[in-house]
Image 1 (spheres, rainbow, N blue to C red):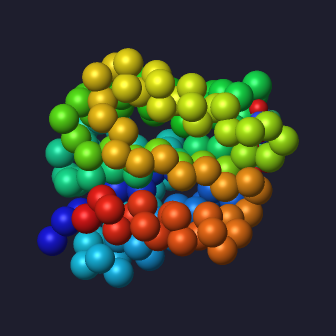
Image 2: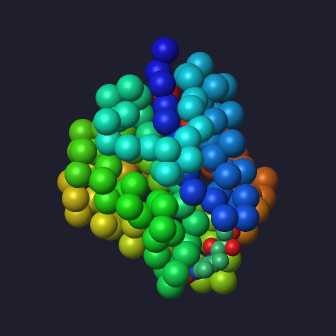
Length: 139
Ligand SMILES: Cc1cc2nc3c(=O)[nH]c(=O)nc-3n(C[C@H](O)[C@H](O)[C@H](O)COP(=O)(O)O)c2cc1C
């Protein structure tokens, strides 16, 4: 069975809701989903999974969350090449630029980003479906 790690940071619950929807998608496609807080994840766990969905909202000024998510990401990113990776997260007042920057940075590091999903605040029906589809695509 395909094991998918859904590694996320969420301050007010919107990205967490997306993570749960991604997990639904994984399970509906017959995979096994693990929901993991960013602080609890490290590179030595990478080999335990077949695919990864990383979730972080737009923070700072179109940036990743700097206290917990970004340190984890900096540690993990150099070891993601060749693995199945998707990105997701919530935003509010801008237009999703943080996700464009995150995807560009990830691809510049030689990692293929299979898919990205963004949601304005709490995921609406369309974003919820996109999260489930992202999860299913990783199985
Ligand atoms: C400190 C801080 C910085 C933020 N920076 C941005 C930003 O640069 N662009 C944006 O569109 N939204 C920004 N937001 C809004 C959050 O991305 C939005 O509220 C999101 O839904 C939070 O997701 P969460 O519930 O998973 O924490 C910011 C929010 C906070 C608290």
